[in-house]
Amino acid sequence: MSTPLRWQRRALSHADLPSVPPLLARLYAARGVRTESELAMTLAALQPASSLHGLTAAIELLVQALHEQWRILVVGDFDADGATSTALSLRALRAMGAQHVDYLVPNRFTYGYGLTPGIVALALSEKQPQLIITVDNGIASHEGVAAAQAAGVRVLITDHHLPGATLPPADAIVNPNQADCDFPSKALAGVGVVFYVLSSLRTRLRDDGWFAAQGIAEPNMANYLDLVALGTVADVVALDANNRRLVQQGLTRIRAGRCCPGITALLRVAERDIASLVASDLGFVVAPRLNAAGRLDDMREGIECLLCDDPAEAKRMAEDLDALNLERREIEAGMQNEAMAAMRELTISEENLPPGLVLYDRHWHQGVIGLLAGRIKERFHRPTVAFAPAQAPAYGEMPSELKGSARSIPGVHIRDVLDAMATKNPGLITRFGGHAMAAGMSLPSTQLAAFRLAFEETLREWVPPEAYDAVLLTDGELSASELNEQTAYLIRDAGPWGQAFPEPLFEGEFLCLGQRLLKDKHIKFSLCHPESNRVIDGIAFGVDRALWPNLKCERIRVAYRLDINRFRGMETLQLRIEAMQAL
Image 1 (cartoon, rainbow, N blue to C red):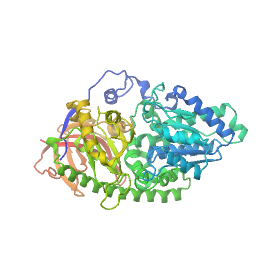
Image 2 (image 1 turned 180 degrees about the horizontal axis):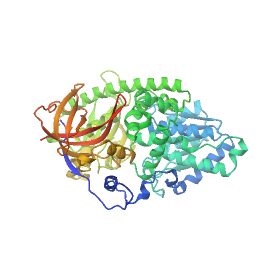
Image 3 (image 1 turned 90 degrees about the horizontal axis):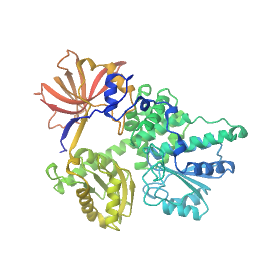
Image 4 (image 1 turned 60 degrees about the vertical axis):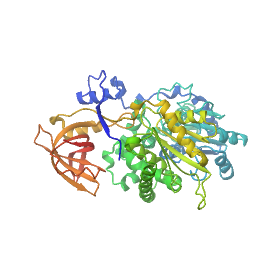
């Protein structure tokens, strides 16, 4: 069972794009582009860092740390954004002359997320830092910052998550989502924030004559844009114009082979053609393998892969991460089956879907519940929270604490929903944080039933019924003359496409000349546009086997993306089918 899709064409708006091909102008306009300046993908077009609130204090702190050679400790997050942020920080700070810089990433199963007092205690005992720099976390770490400062350790927070009502008492905070920050791109990922901070530090050191005095080469910050592109795409932040520039610049360097050996190895182990890499490859190929370390084991494995400069060693690390990702897939598949069974036990069906879904199993893996929540959300188009025990309970016992991961739908700001629930129900949620579309939380296991009721009640109050309609937005039809490899290349090179700037999705009716089942779950189609004699391949992944193959189907309506299939040195047009209806 899944929520049926309503097909709808994207609304077109006015745009002044005179030098852009008509098809691209239509696609860009539907995504909110108004002027050609928004399409400039150069580094010179990046938003200046000067409007980042807290940047001056951060730079002064880092300059002092370099001059006095403080012991610097980078504390990251256990996802791909955190891993790339950590790797970038170590690479750049070392290149700028920092002699004592190390990192620490909380093990999610032991310490949880962020700069907690427990992580500070571990840092003090193992690393003895004089300065802690958080990357992709810290904006909600009030207790951890206080613990660090009580021990005489300075703290610089770089983060992009939404802050609460008060900020931690850090020495400096750089976060574009602070209330008093005028930086126009609020969608920066954590790796984007730290890239801006360290780029500004590089400029300050150059102006001060630091590199000449130290006898070291001034680092080119553009060399780290492969990491910025990976972390930005992996964190599924909105690809506004500024983020698209960062991603495009990183993709250009990766395609040219100018990236760290770890990223190259991860692409090769996934058998991806590096020269034709697109943004979605970073999100669906590299990021899952990198994230597998943090989900199942220790994100240090992923970070070390990104820090490795030996191609042979990076290859070995990438193979280990690939094996972890295969294990993660098996765990996730089992959890999905259990989730569907749980919904049947709760008598949840398409006809009686509640406004939000809350699922729990004592055997679920804490590192995979976010993926599970995302899968269930996609299938039923409902905000979804999946819970797992914070620690494995003894046999027959109920765990004392649950960790939850939420995924939302457009129009439902999930962090604000949790904030409203926590305000109205003190003690219900121990802690939470996140974005509009994703959030994490902890709560006592005794509050699970109350959480489910409060979640559904809040959504009923906040969300209009039409928000639950699953809409498939398309970019209309392509003519028979536009269905060719040249159009596919044009669209590919017009990206990067991604979150909030989606890859074009077209719709159309075709003659269905043939269907072939692949691996018992995919369908290979032979299609023909009614106004053309050309036979075009189409492929649909993970089809509903109750409906397909449909050998009676002679005419089919499909929603598709243009793709290039590479096989034995040949490149041919292929329609990547996202939805289909037999006519």
